[in-house]
Length: 105
Image (cartoon, rainbow, N blue to C red; front, top):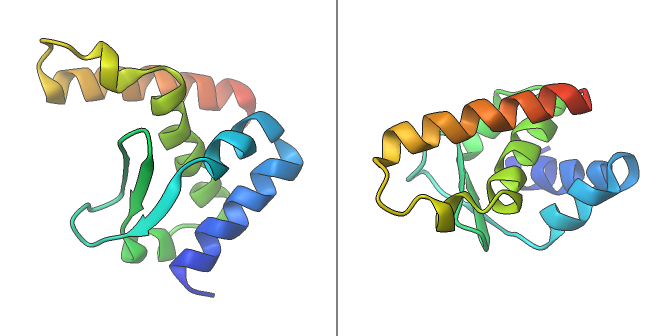
């Protein structure tokens, strides 16, 4: 199974197991790229590196997908404003990972 199929399967699995996250994940356009080392999202496009996706377990693909969806849910792009980008991303990742942990991912 290739990376695109794994990403699509993760979205389908989210729809059946966590419909809230699954619905939001379906609103993002999947785009394969080597320009990012893992995954990234801009609110409309979820970019993923196929080599990164293919080294993950299915449950990890699911978790990273939810992580990226939560960046959108929590409006991290619009709320960054004047903050330093690297520190802002680290802080938002910390919050998101706590939420993901609490949901059992």
